[in-house]
Amino acid sequence: MKNVRTTICLVAVLFGVGQAGAGTWTDIPDYPGTVNTLVEGISGTNIVGYGGDTVSRQYGFLYNMTTKSVTNLPISGYGIDGSNIVGGTNQLYNMTTQSLTTLNMPGAQSIGILGISGNNLVGYYWDGSANRGFLYNGTSWTTLNGPGYATYINGIDGSNLVGCYYKSPGIQHGFLYNGTWTTLDYPGASETSICGINGSNLVGYYTDTSGNWHGCLYNGTWTTLDYPGASHTYIGGISGDNLVGSYYNGYPSGIQYWHGFVYTVPEPATLLLLGLGAAIAARRR
Image 1: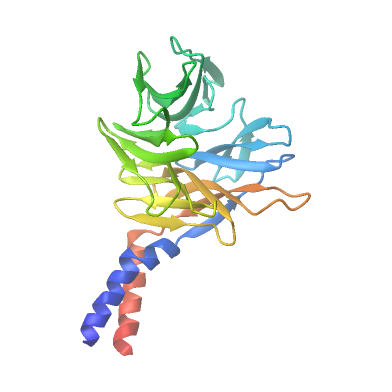
Image 2: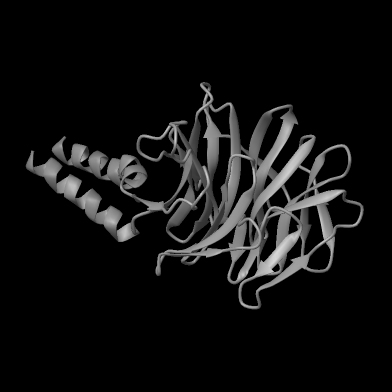
């Protein structure tokens, strides 16, 4: 019986609570002079996002995790891949050449580019009646409508696209698209949105029945990731073991409302050591 309890404890730590709770939360500096810092994307050690002031102006920035330096951007930072950044509008910014490229989709009244991977861009466009998802490969535009009346494609990795669609007003459902639409709703949540993808790991957030946001990681199973003490957590991007997003701690006077963070998932070896430690402790008891 003792060996059975030891095995159960090891499995629980490796695949349950240990994996969800053993990561590290690191704050990103608030953007100066704004009331919100929203973090949306990450590529390697570079993180992009934007600061917002009280009149809804946005100020794009890039934060480097190694140098801990902040660089102002001419566009809001929604997605990044290497030296290329997209800003939620119809512009692409290259950090190396410091050039802006404007893209116009034929027949669209407006577009928002939300994700990038190599030459592929994803987002949404307004056709006069609803927002439709799109994929642009540098040459051609492809409309991608989810099983609802509005679609937003937030991220891309290879042939896999993620985002959210609306079946009824105000209710969003997460999805994975790779030629087939797969709806991904966090169990028991009132809404779900998938915001980023890296291999088999998908990140985003869900809304509970009380209206609170919770960050989440999905890789075949769901893991909730809430910034400690925050009432709302949003995860916008993922690169390797690092997840980025923002958390909210209310509206106290004179300070920021939303703040950025990096959540670092422990290496598999760390999880194994945690599990072995718990197993040894269980055997001693």
